[in-house]
Image (cartoon, rainbow, N blue to C red):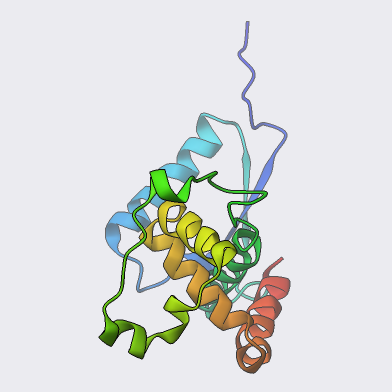
Length: 165
C-alpha cells in the first residue's frame, strides 16, 4: 500500500532570485532543507522561476514593500480597537491608574490634559492592549498613510506587491 503525499497536487514556484548573495549561509541551508522536505516528504512539484520573471531587484524591494504595507494594514485595521465596540473592556478606575502629569509635561503636551472621557478610554485600551511592536507598527502605518507620504510610500509598495503577484 503506497502512502499518498499531502502536497502531490501542488506546484511551488521558487524564484532563482531568492538565492541572493547577501543571504547568510544558515538561511540558504534552511531554504534548501525546506525545499527538499516539500519535494520528498510532501510530494510537491518544485518549479524554478527564472530571473526574467522575478528579478533579484524586485525581491530586494519586496522586503521594504512588505513592511510598508503591513504597517499600513496594522494602522488601518487596529484603529477600530477603541474599547467601546472592539478591544479591551476596561473599567478605567479599576483596571488602570491613569498617569498624572506634572505641570512641565502638560505644558509640553497640552493635549494630555484636554482629553475627554472617550479619548481617555481609547488611550487606555491601546496602552494596555497593544504591545510595543504593535504600537510601533501602528505609528509607522499612520505615517505611511498620511497624505504627504501616501503617494511616495504606500503606492510604491503597492506597485511592488502587484508586480510580484
